[in-house]
Length: 328
Length: 193
Image (cartoon, rainbow over all chains, first blue to last red; front, side, top):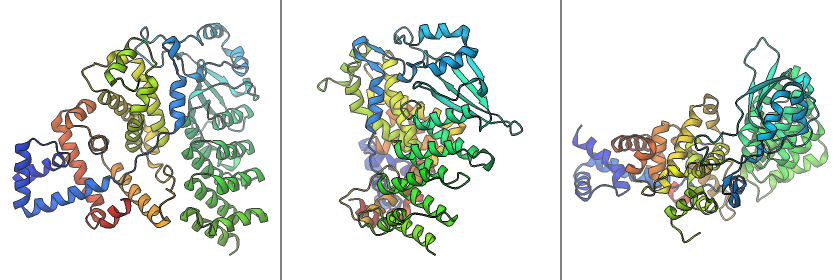
């Protein structure tokens, strides 16, 4: 390693003032007499300084709320994740079919708090390792109560098999299998999408990814899924999830219902996040290009957005583009 | 609780009383969340990481030794969580989201400055994403969390020499990626001041 290479490796340490005095002095002396390293050093300093342009991101308040919800100070225990607490009649319906033997076991264990000192090895010690597979035809499409489901995953690995599967934890690990258009499957997916307090956001996000792949196929067109996405766009607190919802609505076959259009307009009007508003305006422009007709209120909203001085400049531009698509 | 040191708070937790949970969260959640967010470039995952890190802190409190810094221990848990997350094939494709979505435009900035600021953020985040996970971890902990190489080595489970190399390589890559902007860079630096 040349002297220059050695000195350059020290430069990041020089930036953090972490070099010992002797090496610091030596490195500075080298930089002063070596033009190449002097340039390198200037580059390091500028880059280091420029990295400071990365702003600090605020932690969403609900993260703390959810964290503290899992802590029960008076009991000095960590409660099982809140989402595990409720067992619903809907589960009971399913369990009655397949899980008769294990039902009593779960019922006896579901509300027991975790004793940390006794069970230090695993955060998931309340999970039941057993897994059950339920055909969708045996599960009622009417989900009763507000079951909490977690760790949602999707199974669609065999292209020759038209069935899909939806796996999740409720009190045990359950996989419901069936056709994408089976009412129970649609309702389950809708439930995952719409219930932000029940299914964790990555589950919702993954669900939308999956929905996009599956239900953008014309043969799987499902108005209920589009309705669910419209509700996600209206209600989800997570902007990443709302963006995915718009993108997916944009790809649903069969045109947009009045409800979908309404959700897009509401998002464009009042979503706090400019990226969501941009996606909404793009989706509206796509609808216009595909021949959808818009009522005067929708056109007014687009016009208003295109000229609204305090609106994000991207949204203004996109709104103008959307209008030009509607009125070529 | 606010007057107690980290070590004192952790001793209470280790005794089985979780009442300091909120105070510890307030002290470190922002750093944990920002590290995870910049590492994974995914706000949903960063939220999960933050929650789970603090749950693990309570659950495994007895593994914390009083002579260590709480921040180092928490970052160790966070870095492990993030590495596991990236290891899952499903999540690799999710890295590319969330750039403009997290920061509402500050009302006091002009649209041009807001755009410029966001563009700078986008460029830096893109450059960070181009690093290897090891380099990204090292530079985030060094540049943005102000940790020493010894602390980073402890978090990353490697030698200080390895940390030095990772930071150096990361800086080389970042300098190349951001160099055009940084060296002509007064415009950019002014934009954020």
